[in-house]
Image (cartoon, rainbow, N blue to C red):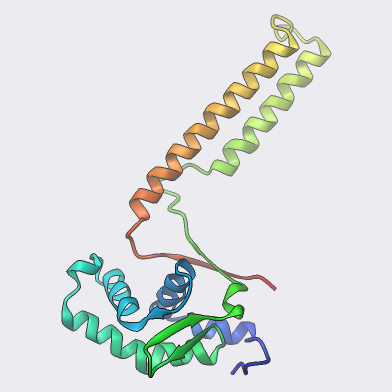
Amino acid sequence: MASENTPPSRDEVFDAVKNLRRRYVLYYLQRHTGPVELGELAEQVAAWENDTTVRNVSPSERKSVYSALHQTHLPKLQSAGVLQYDPDRSLITSTDDAARMDLQLASDPQTTLPWHQVYLILAAVSLGLLASVWQGVYPFTLLSGVQYALLIITVFGLTAMGHTYDLRRWRRRANNAAPDFILELND
């Protein structure tokens, strides 16, 4: 268990975040600055768990999550050193050690392109094209170097616009969805 002066170990953190409900708590805290009220947190976690909106969470679902957070999950995360929980005031605050954790939404590879690969391929093709122009290889001599440079810039620009559109579309879909995580500890 991490004390106030010693940061949590990697094993303590991974043990604390094994549970999906605790990952939901950390994700919620990461998206909100300052203290978070337990009731508000319980409603959102219940909504994610029941694949619904906060407005449609039933009182029994909220109470079940509230009790489990209060009795089990928040004390476990506090002992791992990633949050402070004040049960008397029902307030949860992220710690400095939580800033070392990087919880990221995992991408859905079935609904989006692997954009990093698209950019790498474009860069390789552009390099080959410019090398061919520089060497004077036919048919690449039909346009000037400046025209090829403009073509490459245009292709990268259009690709970036497509990437931006895809990212915005993905964010709209994922906006109220329960998070799926990739956890990285920034040592």
